[in-house]
Image 1 (cartoon, rainbow, N blue to C red):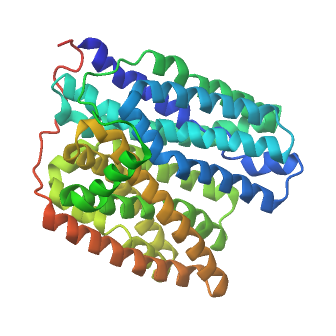
Image 2: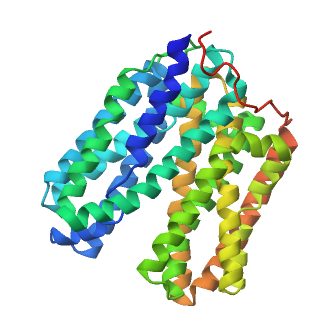
Length: 405
């Protein structure tokens, strides 16, 4: 069983290979340096998003059918290939191909990683510690993202934009040996013949038939949409309020560190306040948009830090609830359904904020968006509490984490 527990550390490496994104500070500059227009850059991101949306649920289903380890291997390989292609490309067509490869690679990892973590812990009788390890993995990703924002800028200034993409390829490649070292836990598997109809059946049951599960999925999707939209809204808010790049960078680092610290302490936070109250607080996340739009700068920044504190434990918590309420045979598929809903909701919410901001002001836009999202969040949470019987697990540190079993 020691090898199964070691899966956790390999998943740490896979998370780092995905989130240590050196390219983020220079991605637009890199594309501009290669002659791309602004609309082409948006088209590239659209291509990436489309590939993710198209393959999100099928890749989760594939992980349930052929194995989570296999999907993580191929996802890591495609992620490495995508960045390798970006690092040697000079035209829109090859950039688009690379972005779509990255999208498919990310879809193969999404859902499969959390499912394999939960099954590995369940196989070693440690599933009660899932929230703790999921929180640590999430925190590691946020720390990697924070460090990468600094390192990427320094590397670009020293060796140029393209060097950042070569370095990103090397980082992505870390996920390949890490995924190869994973051990597939023994679990229940689907016995029906694989088909598109089977994917629709699982999705229908998860979203509409299994009320306890559907409530968690929808509520988690709304919370995920709030956190994703806030990540982009905060950047625009800083610029609208006259913050310079030198002011935005340390503020962004502090926000990411706030998320990382809360994520690492997810199990402790939830055990202290109780899982029911933790979910209730998460359901109120969208109110942050309303307050940021109404309050003066100092108050808005305070709200933003509170938002990021809650965000830190929200994603690990909802993954814990989904894993707790779904069968191991369809675990990766169900986790992918939640991820897909977040992306779909964001594809509506993001442009809505931009449209309203263009018509009036950013403050007005975030207030209106916050009201709409709060209504959706409260409706989803009410449905979830009506069908969910919350029970608190023991989230203390695993006393046997260093020993085999």
